[in-house]
Image (cartoon, rainbow, N blue to C red):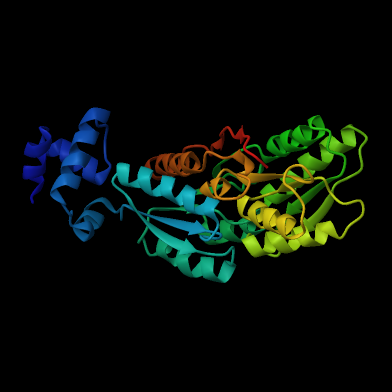
Length: 325
């Protein structure tokens, strides 16, 4: 199907269709929506190579995910893909594992003009090396960020959220608080532990027992909970920095013959669908994961369209979801 037929189907001019396809100029939101719907209904495939030669853009975005097996990362990618497609872009996905060598290989797509910009979800510790590799190319960082960096970022206030968790346990008169954390090279892991510890210190309570999971997995959460149960005094409240770790912790408690939450309360983090699958259902801090992805694309497109625009640090709101744990 030709661009002229798309215009007739959408009831707009050929020029409007062209601007939508090439992401150029201003288009009324309702007209953009009509064009995108017409393209979708007709399975129209523009000549990407011709468009790249004409506009010096590929209309492709590179998305580097630290761990695609992490449900939080997967939900963020859903939001990225939806917003990218709404703006006429496609994504290339790289499961970087915060490995610089793997990241370097993928980032060659930037220098080769195969992608117009990059969204990363790598650890804070990796950002200096990524800055060297990415240079001045359009870039947005999800969840992790550096206050001194000139890179745009989007995430939540992890410190504030973990303070809430500690306060909630104290309000419920839990005496022996514990935590299952992950990799402290990630800023979110540091901030969640700092916020959790700060509340206990302010309340003149004993610091939490902390175990560090080897990875963000069900088994690692179960193993960490098993280690916590060997400590004295035994924890009566556990904060896990991901729902996946929390699910493993609940399983370990069940196998130890302990009741959740009567004997040990458990709180997760992320708000993924996994929270509905545990027994009892998992109380958690729910993140606006897909909104984080959508906002990352919006920030990246601003940088692509105006390379001199200043960096933006966007903080979205989390919410507490109380279930049965």
